[in-house]
Image (cartoon, rainbow, N blue to C red; front, side, top):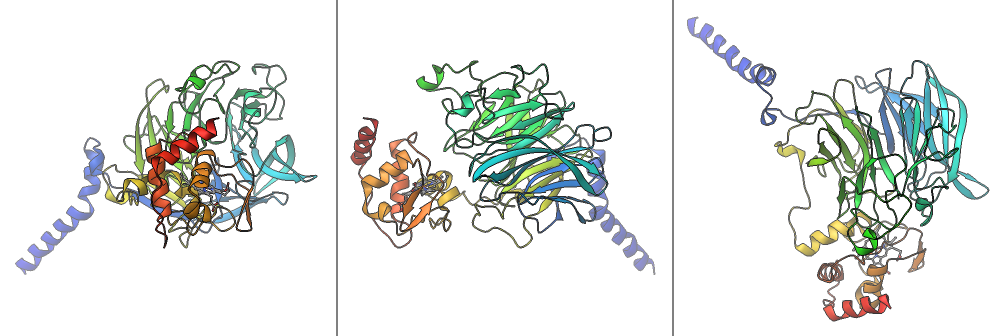
Amino acid sequence: MKYIFLNFVLAIGIFGYFFVLPESKIKDQPKDIKQVSTEVKTVARNLSVPWEIAWGPDNKIWIAEQHGLISRIDPLTGKKEILLKLNDVWQLRTTGLLGMALHSDMKKNPYVFLDYTIEKDKKKYSRLVRYTWAKDTLLNAKVLMEIPAALGHNGSRIVVNKGLVYWATGDAMSMVDSQDPKTPNGKILRMNSDGSVPADNPMKGNPVWAWGFRNIQGMVFSNSGQLYTSEHGDTNDDEVNLINKSRNYGWPTVQGFAESVAETSFKGLNSTVDPLKAWTPTIGPAGLDYYSSDKISGLKNSLLLVSLKGKSLRALKLDNEGKKILAEDIYFENKFGRIRDLCVSPAGDIYLATSNRDWNPVAGFPLPEDDRIIKISNLSKSDPQNSLSSMAAGSKAETLYLQYCASCHKENGLGVKGTFPSLQNSQTVVLNPKELIKKVLMGSTGPATINGVTYDSAMPSFAFMKDEDLLDILTYIRSMGSSHAIPIKPELVKQVRSSLNK
Ligand code: HEC
């Protein structure tokens, strides 16, 4: 009897140690990031490219799916309720429903702002529209603006701050609009909630607030009222920027930090502003949010950035003034696939929205339950489950290929049918070194037809790349699959480069 009793006490003790103590340890001791373990939970499943998610005044997560569905889910039960189905969305590749924002004071102004692609007289437009929220539906559509759109580069993000609507527009593939403050593309536009222009905008009667952008995919105000964006560069220099009124952010001449002679001597209207941070190789930055909670230790006063190509969540620690990024921590790399957006609840939980059913799928995804919304209620830097990096091993050539080419031509070089050509068994790659070098250095300006298939999206230019890296990549793709073409001679790259510069 005694022994049984003792055993019982012992069992409770052990039980208590495993199930109670670690919890209380976390609560009572000073916060040490190593003791916290990552907590991750899927709260919504089977979505189709949720481009934007937002925490609503009803404590639900509002979702805008790319093909035109607005819904909200209860984060506790996962129950989904449809608010609106748009029936005039034009959706192909990166067009469609691309932005949603709730008014900053939904009690007084129950407005929801949407941005989506439409087609009129065979031309594409991005339409900014305001709906009024009434219980379980959205009513009274009021079109605030319609601006030119293209097959790609349509942004976009919308945020509302102190009653004013900020709309980040893409350059819609124009190489001149971003630097022309009289046109609406490649800009951050600022307007009242009825679409009229506030009196304190930079130019009278003009919604343009800042310019020189290519394709903004994330935008957020910090608690102190500073505006930040994330933006896709071309083949190089993705950026995070701190936005100031009436300033020029450089695209297309200045990419990333102004470093080259062409960049430092560029005289655009109102001299250009350097980004807070730039990434080459690119990471495909998307949704951006500001973290002000104490809940997850170490994240306070950070920008949280999710990425598509980089397939990760990144915490960008800001300085006290919010004018510098002091550190970057990368979480969940390759674990959930492409991540398009995030939102933070008032309690400090982070919600991520995957984008594995979009136009550019990656190896290993979508998973059966994609697209998902994933809740993160704790985050540990040292937790090995955070990272399943597939880029760790491999030769330098393979790493370069994965960094610069695989986002389109895929890890195995087979591309995406009808969108990105296969590099395996390509005549250009194997049989025509001069054409190959030319293609990679110059890219293409318009649609190209390869083996009878026309590719609408362009191959970007890699002229910035060092000869040595270029040669590594070329050798790598020439020996993909069953082909074993000999390495290209360095002199040939020099020769093609100089013939292109003439
Ligand atoms: C943003 C997407 C994208 C990236 C990144 C990209 N490409 Fe391409 N590439 C394309 C598209 C689209 C085409 C087809 C249109 C064309 O040929 O211009 C193409 C065509 C090509 C071709 C011609 C194939 C043929 O059979 O004629 C080669 C070679 C090539 N790419 C190599 C590369 C290499 C090497 C890299 C990395 C350094 C790279 N690409 C990165 C999109 C991309």
